[in-house]
Length: 214
Image (tube, rainbow, N blue to C red):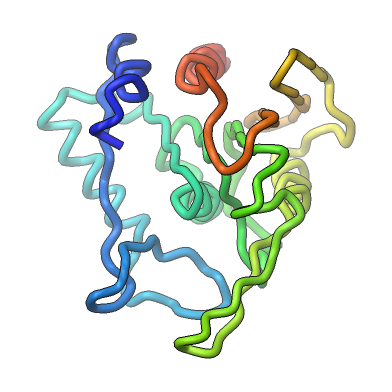
């Protein structure tokens, strides 16, 4: 992520520190992964504790305001953001996952309301909106991505949002929904692409983040 200059500068040009922590390999010689509950492996570590330690470090190193943190992640990192928002709603002021959500068995209770903006590609086949099952031949195990709409319904309940969206905005390649909530806030960006970000995602996300009521 740090090598994607255009992506990073969307944040740093507006005065933000851009911090990209890296997860640990889930097994020796295996790829890095976040400790997301997915019905398979419960890693002997806490991503929430790790992220709190990272935040404490950058507060000192980069003079970051710990009350103005936006946590975002893509794909499996997006699932991590949903998980952290559920387990530690106080960690960040806003949560902006993209192309990732809960896994099954999906939690039915989160610890607090949050400000969340979820972004997803309408044609995403890696993490489809309706979810999918993935079978690992090496370990003979199947894990299942949860339905994104069910996850959003959970956040509507937790934030005490109205059932129907208060605003629906449609442009050439982006569909946006915003719900009125008693606590926190909830918005959805749907774009016409697949497993990726829409153009100008960084700018749109920061506009959302900065528009939140104090």
